[in-house]
Image 1: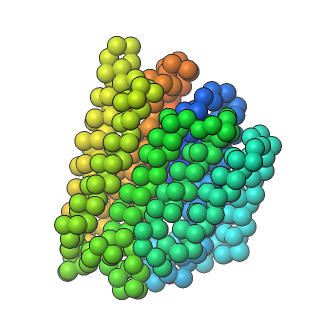
Image 2: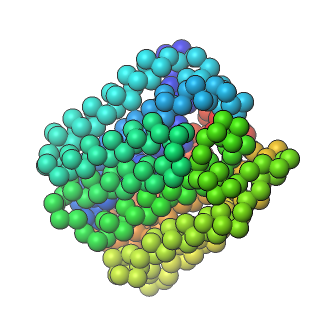
Length: 336
């Protein structure tokens, strides 16, 4: 129990709902409305989050020890052992497969879930060695959504594919742009070729020099992400009206506007204001998480009444803030 807070920091609970709800949304968009089964899928999603983040720290421990920003993480500081971390992420892997076998057994769903874990492992193993690995992680999360859909039927709806695609692009942006951008100076020194480095982003004094091609790439990914998130409205899977008012559409447009603003903040923050960049990244990721429940609000209200979708939005807003406050105090800045 003395290391409980260190284990909590290791699993990064403030971001656990991103992957956690991915199989849930995939299942919902393929016609699953049984609360118990959706809760089991949520548990599998939460275990997937723990797997990928603990394994990431496990593989990156030697590199992270050379960084002044993350050398106090539980594994890099030596507070927690690598052996215990390996037991933790492998435990999450086996429990996920067990739950899937017991509650959702099918050859296709198990195959896709297993492939998702393989892609997560490939990302964690090679993200410091190869560029564009965020696409591998994004594909793993995409398959998590497809796994959720396959627990209902071997036929996956276009709706579920779209929602899984939104999750894919969220991870491509949050890892390939946000996470990698803040570490460009350190990665360049170590010869690590992340996507920003591949585009020629480099440090000059306290500023990051960003080629026009990288800025265009960043906004291109954001635009594609927002466009895919809009498709449920376009194809009529979910209405942009709620009780005759365009509340879901208004929520989407507001989120899209703020996501553009935070993207500009991420791109413009100087190196000596790393905390500022992290705040923009945190806001961006938090709002991106809200895109799906906002777009699906009418769809979910149709099947669950308005209370459950409203509670979902409240939880997705308050959970990250509460976790960050408990772990890091008023600064709300994690060791990233």
